[in-house]
Amino acid sequence: MTDTPETLLVVDDNAMNLRLVSFLLKSRGYRVLTATNADEALAVLRETVPPVILMDLQLPGMDGLTLTRQLKADPRTRRAFIVAFTAYAMKGDDAKAFEAGCDAYLTKPVDTRALPEQIAGFFARARPEEASR
Image (cartoon, rainbow, N blue to C red; front, side, top):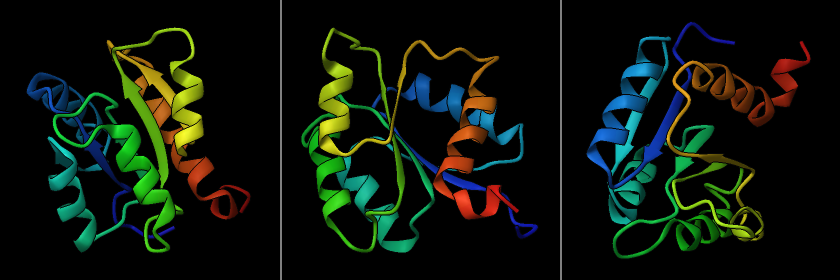
């Protein structure tokens, strides 16, 4: 592993959620990129593809499930570990997220004490070859 911080992209249209998650993760040494909609996320992903993406499912315009399908179909972004990150946790929503290609599922409101450890676990799952060293 390098000395550069682990980078992740948080896609969420709620400014308060973005600020909270960014603050929590930056304080733990992560580099956090943000986007408030699918177009912004795609613009970020043209520059860099982080190993972990937290994806709000309820986005304006293109929703998070559609964006996830698009990212998993693209050879450049398909290996990103995408975490469905949603406040709309109804029965069956997790199955829809996994069918769309999400690799994990987190519900809001975020558990501020657990989130950094959950993110560390996602990075380990995103790069299993490094975790086994």
